[in-house]
Amino acid sequence: MSDKAGPSQEGQLEGNIAAHGNAVTEGITTALSWLTVIPLRGATVFDRITGRRAISALPIVGLVPTAAAVALTVAFMAAGQPADDSAGIELALLGALIVVATQLLTRGMHLDGLADIADALGSYAPPEKAREILRDPSTGPMGVGAIVLSQLVNAAAFALLSAIAIGYWRSEPTFGTISTGLACFAVPFVASRLAATTACWTRFPRQSDTGFGGLVAGSQPGWVIATWWLVLFFLAACSLGLAGLLASASSLIMTLVFTRHCSHRLGGIGGDVLGAVIESSTAVSSCALAIALQ
Image 1 (spheres, rainbow, N blue to C red):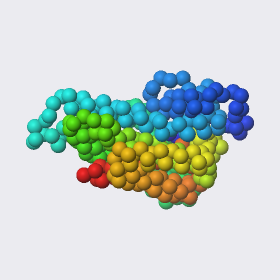
Image 2 (cartoon, helix red, strand yellow; image 1 turned 135 degrees about the horizontal axis):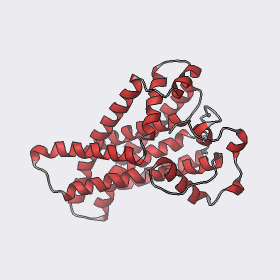
Image 3 (cartoon, rainbow, N blue to C red; image 1 turned 120 degrees about the vertical axis):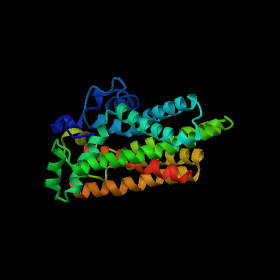
Image 4 (tube, one colour; image 1 turned 180 degrees about the horizontal axis):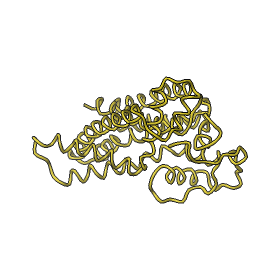
């Protein structure tokens, strides 16, 4: 996510509800077309109405990398049980493949935001200068380091979560064991997309009225965010117990603290912040879940 796209005039940004279709359908299809490689036809009008609907539906986008992770893990299972001396290496490879598949499905756009935010925050510059760093197309050492380290954490965490899911699926197949295995992947990916929805809370100001951030930042009322988190907490608790609650809570806490910090340091929320929040939340929640399930 970045602020390099979007209408630039205030009149365009506000939008006209008459130019839009069904809110649920438009929100889901637009979120999927914006943030994945799935060739869906989303909204044809790009304004704050579009942005609000798409960001409200963003947690659903987390099911796309979830499906990829499940498919790769099932393929790994179908390939047979590895020898004990190579099981760890093969699981590490599986974790890396899940990370690669996730980035391919999302065009790697969130990594761009993570790198930009790392460079801007790492500069310790005042808000105006930090925003100039965000607009710089080059990536500095802080940005590169943030990408490498976050993806290493993700790969290790998903390797562990894959092993845990395989353990459930190879036991007696019941609805409970199947859903628990699926939740090992769904909770981190859905929580990270919900983190971006949370970062668009109306209490967090926009950096600018232009670009992608101008469409989506500050668009989400508290009741929408609270409803999504309650749903996630309930489903995570039902499928993963206390571990699911801890992973979800870690994502929520990290999101609120990190978003507030970015808002203070950068003078508001923009598209790059959302990408950084998604990648950071994925790393935090997947790591927390993997550790809690051990």
